[in-house]
Image (cartoon, rainbow, N blue to C red; front, side, top):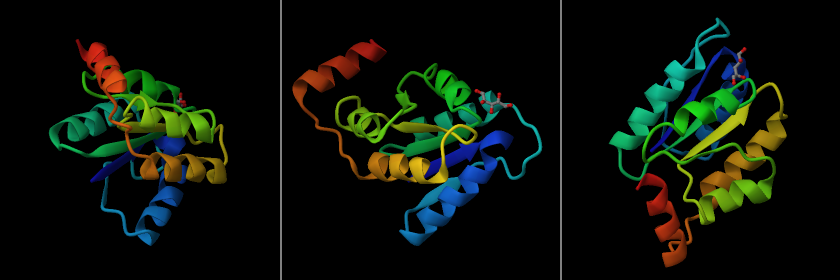
Length: 142
Ligand code: RB5
């Protein structure tokens, strides 16, 4: 299951990315926000992180204006590994090396096409599951 949420600044990008998710028939849940009316990004980040932590093998997409506030908030949650990629390579490596489970995007700072490329990369890249990476990820939480 994929969870997706945004604040008002990420709302338009969220709606566009949802159309792609519907097209490729991915099972997802939209946790809001549902309009461009101002809301506080930590509230949406907390909502999504709690869902991801409760449902094994789930992941999330968080969108705010820059992606920064969502990423800072999400990484306060033990077990959440949130990434704010700056290119396709970092989106890919966040999955293969860091087993990132939350993708953060900035609706006001990157184009829809760049966001889509990051999302596609995030969704299709598996964790390498090698011992060195598993050990390093365990050290984050320990
Ligand atoms: C909202 O104006 C903006 O501050 C928020 O979307 C985000 O960019 C924060 O990191």
